[in-house]
Image 1 (cartoon, rainbow, N blue to C red):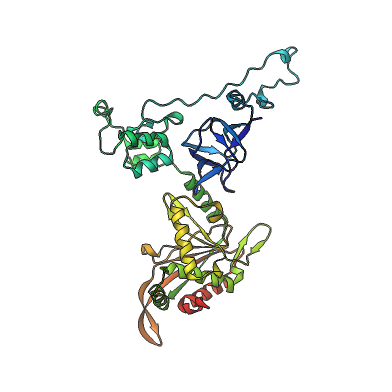
Image 2: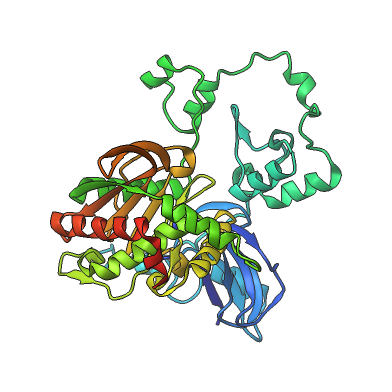
Length: 450
């Protein structure tokens, strides 16, 4: 009996993904554990392994296909003794119990209706290879992987022909263009001469045809607007932030902390003989936040409809900006780790996050979040809680400010912190208590060593 290969759910929130690349082709032998494909989710590109052995009989969803729903049949694996005909039969749905229910005769059909032969379902047609570039108006249809490779190699997608579904440009098309050098940016495509005399379509028209109606009032105000279709990541970010901002009662508290002692300790640690690390201010804040949560465990919680979950371990989720969105890799059991370990893990996680190589368990979960925009010169800001977590800390830039010290005017390097908590599970006094402990740890960083 043939084996169905379905689009996997690579995370609890995944509903669809992009089949970026097949690592095998029809006719190849497959054994359990072999990497057979790469799937692009809303957060990362992940490898999919085979769970059965056999021969890959038929690929139903080609490279570069976007918005493939979870549990969609993407390929057929043949067992011993089966051939290509069995794969075609399985793919066409003519196997046992595969006929659509709508084609089964009803009990009250007229006499003789049961004797009529039901029409056989049509076999899915393979997508025809496009002879022209995969574009509509000014918009070029290409898979995210193809776009990324073309950009990295200075190729112009407008000069390529797509072999994917509906003429979409996929990785194989970009690879071919790289080999023959036919799509280098800056060179005039072969079909350009005939097109030069034609009037250029307005950008709004291309945007309208891709996403919105051209009659939308926004195009009358901004006729040169470009419509950028939502990626799976952007859809997920929009949905989760909307739900959190709408459904979670945010309560915000702020504090300014002096970081002169912390900066001095950081300089001393990084300049030690034989030091193979470079600890950042953010590493100190991550460690201090984890210890503050251990001191105020009522802030290390999550809200559910049934109960408040109180965590013994601090798994710190740290926001990292990546191409097209945001991801929060997690430092597990953060309070028990030293600054050098936290620094090394953070660099590794952030690097792999930007490359789209994180595993789901490395960015899903977490008991508390930190978002730091200080490197952009932002003085202070309020973040939206990463539900169901109970809180998120926003970190601004350290800057020299005047202060009163021992009754006299002085200057200090001050950093602004803003804490947002879910008021359903964290009361104001608990939030203030956490921020008080965090301020004490940052201003007296020797406590981080104890």
